[in-house]
Image (cartoon, rainbow, N blue to C red; front, side, top):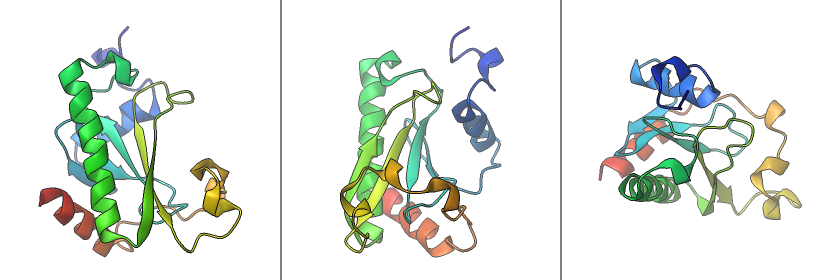
Length: 153
């Protein structure tokens, strides 16, 4: 069964989230981009943490044809540009793993000048995600609107 097979629709959290996005049921949705969906992360261990989810879902970046791969990587950078523009971030970290959830997804992580040592130089997975605030669309309404506007520009 391939990742694009409809019977695989619930096989990973990425598949389930893309299905919810397609139905308009994910309040963390930032925008539909050429390659997929820009969303805020469920846990905001750093404000503005976002993901790019491909649509259709594929197992890895290497499973995309060259043109689709280029679109996905360009959209990932566009999302990072938008976050950099509207937050007070110093830089953006990008990551793709797919080990725990074997479906392509890119983490787009704003990094800030005021992060405390030693986390300020650590990878984002060093943060305590379990204690991080859950994304709240109402609380982050201004950030959501600003990132949407930056992506639309």
